[in-house]
Structure formats: structure tokens, C-alpha cells
Image 1 (cartoon, rainbow, N blue to C red):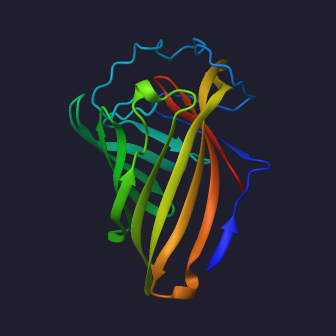
Image 2: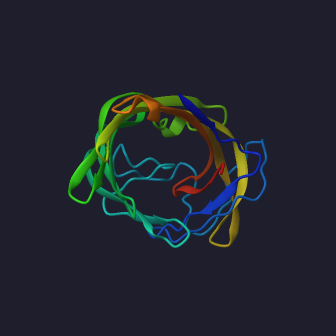
Length: 235
């Protein structure tokens, strides 16, 4: 089994261009002391966000038809293509289109938080990845999303690879680590900083020599009423 470790001595800063909200963000230092998020145009006051469904989380908003563009040239487009349910229980379908194909993720949402229940990938009209199982919490409820909160989830997928196939488990462990100052619409605001470790472990494959086990380290930045405004990852 091959093992690849991606560490984070230095990190690449990814600027998210969010078409729906018209924002960009860049991490600029950090502080461990909880403070009130600085007011800026377009950011709802704490406690004022009115969700349209259980999947419309103030730190992870999902409303039907909303889009965001990421990547250096905005070539990756993520859209909430369907919402069903109410503010108590809901399901959201989120589609990401890029040069690699189309990813479709289905989330189940309730007062317990957000659960990623299905992850599918397509190459043209052909489905090349499906979900075998999942466990754990993908994103905690709003009242628990505060400094010190920890959670983890796992999803097992089957993917077609040319003439073969592979089954892999992706585990994510996250911690709300503190606050960082970020720019939003040319103003500095405090974003909750979330540190996550992703472990991808290949379980079995048509070619057993292709099995790998590797880690990715991420830092995500979330602003109340806006969602994720930027992230860092190891290269």
C-alpha cells in the first residue's frame, strides 16, 4: 500500500468568488479570542439570519438556485439545484460542474445538523461514482458551531476507473479552532476558522497494487449569513 502525507508548513490561499453574494475573501492573520463578527455590508447581524429550510444553515447556506464560482478563473460552478422539506427537516441537492465532470451531493438536514448522505460523479452521461455507505456528522447545527466544537464523518464510495474500479473511504475530522480576520467586500470581518483533516483510504480495487492511503489538511473560513469565504490547503 502506498502512503502519501500532505503537510501544511505553508499553505496556498484560495480566493472564492461567490456569485450569489458577490464576495471575495483573503485570510489575514488570526486570533484565538472569541469576538463579535465585525459588521460589513451584506453580513446579517448575529442571530438575524432567517433560514428557508433546515439545509439553509447561517454558516452553510443552501437555497435553491444559488451559485458560487471557485478556482482561479471561476471555472468550478457549484449550484444548489433542489431543496425539499421545511425548517425542521429538509434535503438539499448540490451540483458541482468542472472540467473533471459533474459531482452531485445530497444532504439531509435537521436540528441535529447537516449529513452528507450521497455523493455521485458523472463523466458526461455516465455515472462513474456512487455511495456505498456514510456515517457521522458533516456540519454541526448553528447553535453548536462555535470555537472548540469538533465533529467527524465518513463516506465510502465506488468509482469506475477506465477498465477497473476502486472503493475508497473518505474520513474528515474537523475542529472550530478560532477566529481569523478576513476581507469581505473590502472590509475586515472575523470569520470562524475550521481546521479539518481528510484521510482518503482505498479499501479494495480491481488492481490491488493501486491502493493508497493519504491525508489532506484544510483550513476553512466561515462568516455568519454568508458561508465559507475562503480556505487554505497543503500542496
